[in-house]
Image 1 (cartoon, rainbow, N blue to C red):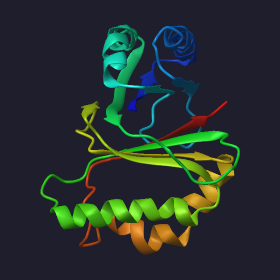
Image 2 (cartoon, rainbow, N blue to C red):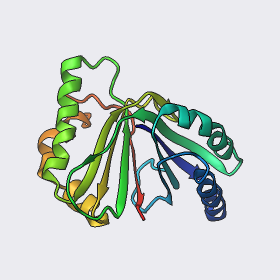
Image 3 (cartoon, one colour):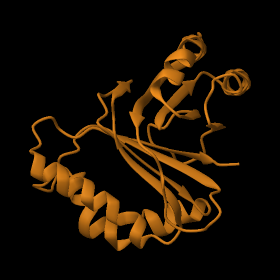
Image 4 (cartoon, helix red, strand yellow):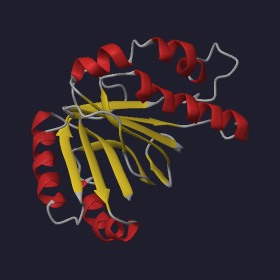
Length: 204
């Protein structure tokens, strides 16, 4: 499976709604097996105004569709675009509704050794096991990055509802005990030193 995510900053509400309409029309002819085009919800950090998420069977399908989306995202009302292209498939964790989709784009420092990188990825994979509001998740290494940083990883989840993200997930002790140390500049184990993109939207 091949995946594409774009977090798009748009000038004004009218510009956002216009772009949403054009992107939704474009995804119907994209060849993607699944699509998500939604305005982001309040509370995102560096997460854009529009979230575009595409799932393809293979990279060639994306390469055929990419020029259409590149053209749409170069329009004057579009500001910053962050995103990534990456292989991988989601893991179903629980049989729950998936009303909210969330993605995290991050960059691991290039001097990080392989052992630390493995521990970091293993700690991220612990989260879905303990956070009961997660219905599915995916941790992927980035093949091609777009935007403010050369993103190295995409960590994404589907949640039962918005509270499942903003409450049990972000406030869970597993964050404090295992995950936050990799992001905290005051911790000697920090390896994520750039701004992250934390974005989420309704998942109809």
